[in-house]
Length: 298
Image 1 (tube, helix red, strand yellow):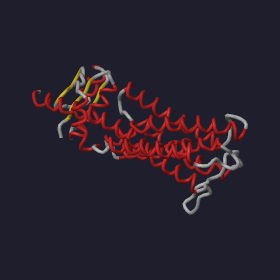
Image 2 (spheres, rainbow, N blue to C red):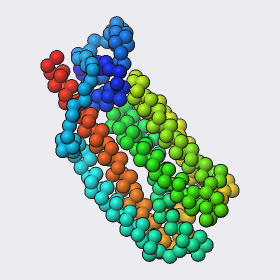
Image 3 (cartoon, one colour):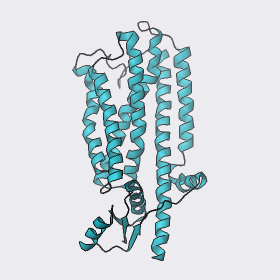
Image 4 (cartoon, rainbow, N blue to C red):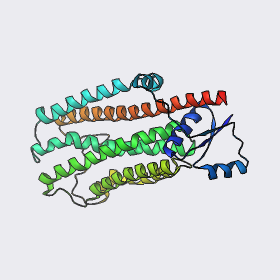
């Protein structure tokens, strides 16, 4: 296996190159500056090729799609199906389903709030799984997946908190209480934001990109069962679970649009994540090709 030594102070670019070259089958060493590079060389590093002052090749949208379509070719279909299901579910929920006998019309917020809450938690579980694979097996695609999931999961968690506050005003008389379920969801948003901030800091700092953020993602998993069981472990204003594996307390006329909305939101979530992965893979594969050409002429 040939070794490529990348010396550049742009940590974001270095991380992208490192992932692409590992996918291509190279062993990659990195350094942020000349002093660090000389230290590694004096320490016995003998690279087959040294790359400095990285310039990412420019690619148009058609070429990006062509390079990634074999891996993620169903992304447009997935996203379009999700948008259609979301639109149908929301239309039925907002205009065709009956109001709740206790909460009245305000219950219609459920058709956005519940899917957003489920996907906020489910997205973090996916983030943690991808981070674990990247941390243990160092699979470059896992780190790309984790980076793609994090901002989407943070967005759905924020939507959950905002819609929950709007729902809480007519139901509880206030937009916010430090309820166990609400607080644990807020902690989930902070975990997402912490992961994104740490990942960006690792990109700027260079070195072993992704390790610290992956550890944070794994530590944050402890919050997921707290979110799930908070309404059972403590006395809270938030209602208990309405849907379990064996039964549902929601009327069929309200459950159907909720399930359609959940399916649509899930497909949109997956489609957006895959689009982000698609773009990242296309960039790294393009860079890998350019470096293989450089290695051939070295």
